[in-house]
Structures are given as structure tokens and as C-alpha cells.
Length: 515
Image 1 (cartoon, rainbow, N blue to C red):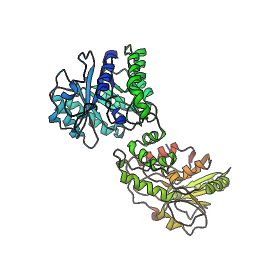
Image 2 (cartoon, helix red, strand yellow):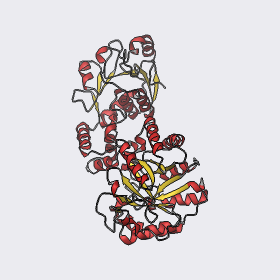
Image 3 (cartoon, rainbow, N blue to C red):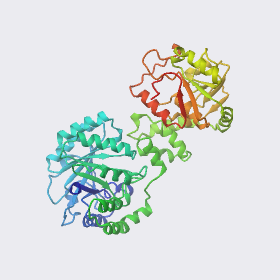
Image 4 (tube, one colour):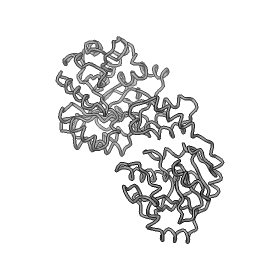
């Protein structure tokens, strides 16, 4: 693998998000020369865009503008530029010659894949090596990724890059992604990896990737001190040192440190980057980083508030930032925000040391009534029903988060625990915002009440009537039927949401969530 492994420095391209690519003419040349002399395999020297070039910036309009920045002796170093699909007229790209960049990396979204790959083909026909860099690969399902790889195989680029745009990748994700790509990408196409520091895992993930020992070209992106759009990238000085120690590479760490001291530290004193909790939150929810920035800049939200709002962002809005949509969620959040400290304290005391039983409105409340009656008679639990009150079982509390369901139970004699999105009479009102983000497909009463009980220090609940989503025969009473259609992943999503809550659940009746 040693000869197939290449390290790509993207300081002058990705790092440019920090300083608007204004490195300065002399410094651009010095950084390129220093990286080349340090033995870096590929140096990325900026973007090609349809905009006017300036000598002190690493955003270019013509390849000829780049040539005088490159060293006379390239050695074994390749040079690359990046094009975002739709941002550059490929007709302006000159045919490849050895005095200019060797590779063009093309980025594209999941909504313009075909246009992006057509751009790749045109660049290949001009003689360049091409790297296909799909934006936010974590947003692809396995089926979508396999479909993309089929198209990649048809154009046979130099490399296909796994780009963790939102920094949300975990070791488990990397394992799955690399396995899928390696087993379905044609031989002869390399695999690249571009990581971000949202969860401070880039160095660990890069090591894990290297331990795969793939039998193909491998390219790892990194930058000096991890310079890049906040929170930043994999630091090249770290990964190059690791490669020297364990992969018989010979990168000059001293050369990299000289570049850092002369050119990067002065920038870092003026423009901070690196791990920050707010970008962890964007990664945690696998969405565009601007949402977290935008909300925190409101000035009246804590990181916890931002986390609750981000958890509500619908899948179709995650990849592309919308200030209008963010404002809509922001104002909705403020309208539902209350101080529920007193209500929670009372409920914590009332439930302390009690057996707690939850009743969800599934049809097993009818079909398993003997089992439920026996449990209630033998154990005398505190019974909490969820968005309904059954007439055949004794109920101590009803948890209400659904306005439509409230209309069916408002005259009940049991105590009401309501969420703050309901402007209704209540015995105990709790903050809707603190519970609503526990389920990724929108609000779910069962998940919300489990989250609340966990917050109230309840360790174990017995659950009946949580049958899981089915098309027919799903409810204790047909008047409770929801006409919202769910996809095939809904039950698995609920199961996973329950698993993540710090509470033990015993299913008394059959459930599709009991896995």
C-alpha cells in the first residue's frame, strides 16, 4: 500500500474559507514550494471559478494564471485544483500540459449528480486526472451510494473521494462506507478521504482508514494545522508523522513546521478555527454548518437551545442552508419555551420509587387485555397513557403533546401532563422543546414521554399498546387513528430513538419496537 498511498494538502483551497483565499502572492508561492520540498504527494492550489482572479488569492479563472505559481522542479508532487459543479465554465479550461495542474477535483450535490459527472467527463477528455468528490456522502443511503458508484465506474476517474462534508462520520459509518465503496468501485479507481473536525475525530478516523490496507490508490486530504472552514480539517503535520512512523513514508515534519510557523500561525492569531461545540451540534444532526452558526448568532440561545432546534430540521432542508427556514424554527421554538423546573420537580417526587406503566393507543390494549389487567392488579403501577385515555384501564396521568388528541380527553378525571405547544388547562406543563428533538422524523408521543421520564430519573417503564406502525388494525380505538403515512423505516427509527434514551423499557404486549 505504501506506493499507492498519497497525501493531499488542501490548505490553499479549503484553508481559504478562513481568510477569503487572500494568502498573498509571495506566500502562495512559498507555501507551494514548502509543501513540495516536504514531500507532500499532491498540493491543491485553490478553486477554478467564473470570477476575476487576483494575484494574491487562490481562486483562479484560467489555468495559465496558476502556472507561474508552481515550482520549476515539481519533483514527484502532483498539483490539483477544485471546481464546484455549476461555478465554472469548463470551456474555459485549457487542455492539460505538464507545466500546469495535473488533477481537477469536481464536487457536486446529490441533486446534480449527472451534471457533475458530465463535467468530470469533459475534464478527463481534456487530459486531466479527475477526482469525483460528492458533497455530503453521509446523506446518501446505501442504495443511493451504489447507484452513484455505478455511474462513477462508467467514467472511470482517477479517484473517488469519501467526503464527510458535515463532519458527522463515526468509525461505524467509515467502516460501512469504505466497505461499500471498495467492493463496488472498479479496480484502478482510487479512494480518497476528506474529513472535518466537527467531532474531533479526523485523526482517529484517518488512522482507521489507513488500517484497511486497500489494494488501490488511496488519497487522504489534510491541511496545515487543519486550516479550513471552521472547525477545520485533518492536520497534515499529524497524519504525515503517523505515515512516517507506520507506513515508511518520509515527509519532512521540519519543513511542515516551518510553513506553519511562518505562514499559518499568523493567520490563526486573527482567524480562529478548530473544534467548537456548535459545530459538533451540526455534525450530530448531519446538516449544514450554517444552521448552527446562524442560530447561535441570534444571541439569546444557549448551545442546548440550538441543539433542540437543530434536531427538528427536516431531512429535505439539511443539506442546503435556508435562513428563512431557520427563522421559522427559531420563532416556533421561542413560542414553546417555558420554565418547567417546578413541574419537573413535583413529578420527580411523585414518581420516585414507583413502578411506572405506559399505555400507548395500539390495538394490543384490546387483544392482550388479560395480560395488562393482571400486571396492573399484581403490581399497582402508576399508569400514564399517551395522548389518549382508555376507558377500560385505570389511568393516573395522561401525557398530552398532540392538540387533536387533547380534544378527545380534555374532560378526563386523571391528571394531565401537557407539553408547552398546547395552550390548554394542565396540571403539569413541561417544555416541549426539551422533548421534541428526541425523534428524527418529527415529534412522537411515545418517544417524548420516555425522554421526560428519563429526565425525571425513572429507570424502568413497562410498556403496553406500543404496537408499531402498521397500515391496518393499528389502534385501540378507530377514533385515534392517524392518517399520516410513514415509510418503511419508521418503526426502525422509533426503535433506535427508544434505544438512545437512558431508560429501560419492558414490552408487556407484542411490539414492532421490541428488537
